[in-house]
Structure formats: C-alpha cells, structure tokens
Length: 200
Image (cartoon, rainbow, N blue to C red; front, side, top):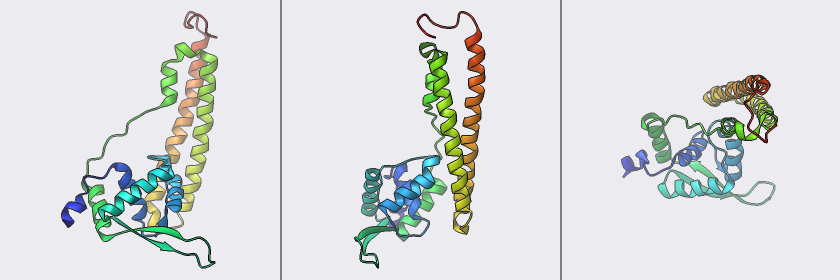
C-alpha cells in the first residue's frame, strides 16, 4: 500500500504542484498556498484559483499525502485550517520528481496566435497587441527578479531562486522578441500589397 501511494499515479500535475508547495516543510493555509503559488509557480507553470487549490488539498488529504488541522491565532482572531505534507506525501512527491517523465513545454502563446492572424488585424492593431505584450513581459521580469532576490535570503529556497532567475530571463526574452517583432512589423507595413482590403 505504501509503495502504491508513493507512486501516486492517480494525481494530476497540479496536485503535485500543490504538494510541492507543502514540501518546503511549513504548515500553510489555502490562502498561504495561493500567495506562494503567485510568488513562484505563477511565473512558469500555474496560477491557481482558490477553488483549484482547495480541490487539490482535498485530493491530497484523501490520498494520505497531506494532513490538516485547525489553528487559532494567538491574538484570538479567526481560526483557519493549515496543511502540512506527510511522510507518505514526501516520499510520493520525491518519487514523482525523480521518476515521472518530464513532459515538454506546450506553447500556447496568444500574442503569436494573433500575429499569425495578422492579415485579419492590420498593422495598427497588431502594434497595440505587441506593445501591450512588451509591457507585460517587462512587468513580469521585474516581479520575477524581485522574488528571486527574496528567495536568496533562505538557503532552503536555493532551487526556487534558480527557477525565478530562469523566469526573469524568460520574460526578458519575451520583451526583447516583442521589440524585434515591432521593428519587423514596421518594415512589413511599409511594403506594398501586403494588406488585405479593409485593414489599415
């Protein structure tokens, strides 16, 4: 039974992600998990809703990978439920990270999809989309850089720091690609005969 649980073949990847958040050894509430996910996971994998987090926590408890308890703050505030990883959960997520196949990234890039359909949008609207993406990527790059600095303060977050540095470089590359595409779009717009009727 323990061996079967350690394999955890029935968990979706999002469940492993939530269990991974608990694997850092702290008791966390659903609210805490949401903050931690936004601080790290959201840059490269998943930005979960509260309902998704609580759904995965129920699944993890049922599997025996996590346990919970109610705690009351010392100041007498509202009680909350906090979750911790179990020994079985630690063994399971360790096995999963080491042995499960690493699926290749699936690129679902809305801006690239719009660029592919640029003949229906026209250069002016396409410029707006690319410029907005340029700003978004720079915002995300700054956030990732700041969070990487925060992770550097804790030795146990060394791999988190590396991941956030990767995210920082990814968004820097996205920003730079958008800049390049804006320049190439300007060249394209200057050519004759490339705009469908009715577009600017």
